[in-house]
Length: 117
Length: 116
Image (cartoon, rainbow over the protein chains, first blue to last red):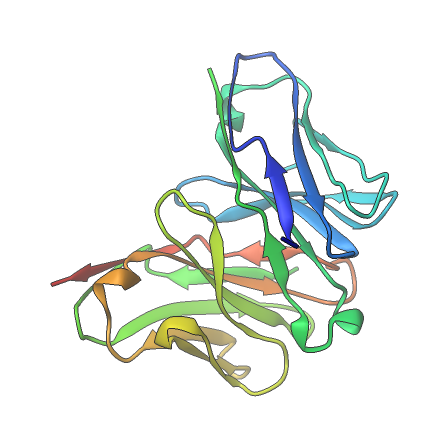
């Protein structure tokens, strides 16, 4: 099925470990972004990309790296996990407004629940 | 810079009563506005969106929202609450242009409780 696929769905890390959260979309969307969700804070933007090879920081980028070598994939890397990175992570993709017509909107993955102990 | 404020982190209503969830936004350019619902331990589901067409937007599950530019608001309403509406609701804004391509800014969320 077309959409945004996130893996893994659950992960437990020890402090200091590194890992990569995977995100892939098959809708040929230009834009992709990563959010973290914490209680009482809504979802906050970590990093985003407007196309292959182009990324930029969002509201809470510290401790996370991204790259976008293809249109389809936008992995999020935790270099040295900390307990403060315990959260639920969502990846999203969208068309640019000019390409989408009435379909403009964001497609979200099902999320990755990460616990850092 | 865009921002969203959801008034009331918790809203409680009786079954059959009106649901009103408030959302105010700040944006330097014409915004695109969204309401999402999240049920416990699940992902985000789009309820409705405003993308500069009709200002009164109808969504799924009987919800609707009205874009009021003069009030910078996009409140979510439903005439009669059902028990199944109990969930967390998020308002979000996106801009096209400037430095805001493809980015959503979310409100803090409102947890809706429905009493029998």
